[in-house]
Every structure is written in C-alpha cells, then in structure tokens.
Amino acid sequence: MAVRRAVAVWAAALVFSCGLLALPLVAFAATSAVNIQGSAFAPATVTVRVGDTVTWTNHDAFSHTSTSDTGAWDTGVIRAGASGSFVFTAAGTFAYHCAIHAFMHGTIVVQALSTPQPTAPPTAPPTPVRTAPPTIATTEAPTPAQSETPTPQGTTAAPSASASPVAAATETASASPTTVAAQVTPTPNTGGGGMGPLLIGAAALAVVVLGAIAFFLARRGS
Image (tube, rainbow, N blue to C red):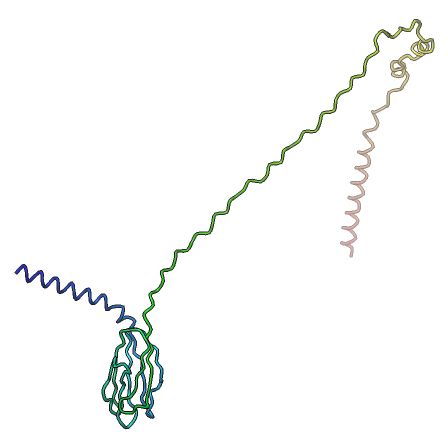
C-alpha cells in the first residue's frame, strides 16, 4: 500500500509539473487563419509565434493540401469547405505547397517567444549637496591715533591786580528793582469784573423769551 501511494503521489506531481511548464504556451497560443481560394494560399506568408496554430480552410470547389517542403507537416487532403490545422512548436521559416497543385506555395514564419526583460528598479535622484555660504570676514575700522597736544609748562596766568572801574560801577548802579516795582504798581480791581457775563446772559435770555411770546401771539392771532 505504501508503494502504491508513493507512486500515485509521484505521478500527480509529474502531471502538475508538466501542466506548469505548458501553461505559458497555452497562455500565449493563438490561431492564424489561411484561406485557400482561387488555387492560392491567402495570405501567402503568415507570421506566428511558437505554440501558435495555423488553420487552412478550403473555399474552392475541389480539394487541396498543406504540405511542408521539408516534410515537417502535412494536413492531408482538405476537401471543399473543410479545414486542416497544424501547431508550430519550433521557431523558423517554413515553406509549404499543395501536394495536388504543385504551383501553389506559401510560407509560415514562426518567431520564438521573447522573454520580457526585467525592468530595473527606478534609481533615486542624487541628493543635492548643500554648501554653506562663504563667510565674509569683517574687518574693523582702524582706530585713529590720538594725538596729544603738549601742554606748555612753566606759564601761569597772572591774576589781575586791580578790578575794572566799569564793572564796579555797573555792579553798584544795577540794583534789583523788584521791591520798588511791587510797591509802585497799583493792584488791579477784580471786584466788578464778574458782573459782565451775568448781565449779558440775562439779556440774551430775555430776548429769547420775548421772541417766543411774540411768535406765540402772532400764530394765535392768525
């Protein structure tokens, strides 16, 4: 029992592996059609990929064949209205003809499956290098040298021996007149100055009252 189970598991794994290997061919397989009409293959040249199928359909009233010049395939007799197919599993250029009508020729170009090239990951842009701004050296203004004026020595100012008679006379004659002026200047009378504004205000009020009475009487009489 153990041997049979191991054989069954091995066979299942083999089938699964073959299916994975054939998956790309199935995914990319396509079918190209060639019409046989007027004793000619149309189109005369067909380009396919490895794993593709070419199908010949006879639209004439008599039979034809699709036979490789090298014997790689032969569809046999294709009767009127019938079709014949072949799967191309190898890359290359294959010429073929009709075995019944030797003047009929065609070409099948089989291209190999191209493996997509891996795309390189995008490269990050280079980081810009930041340079510090140049440092400007500050220069101090030169300090001007102080020039010392030599003080002459040995000379002293001589005091005035006698005061000026003009200055003495001025000091004697210019006495402060503040006390005398305060006594001579009469004091202004401030007792009667406050009645003026009051009289003017009373007169203005009387004028307004009399005017209002006159306006009232005139309006009443009319």
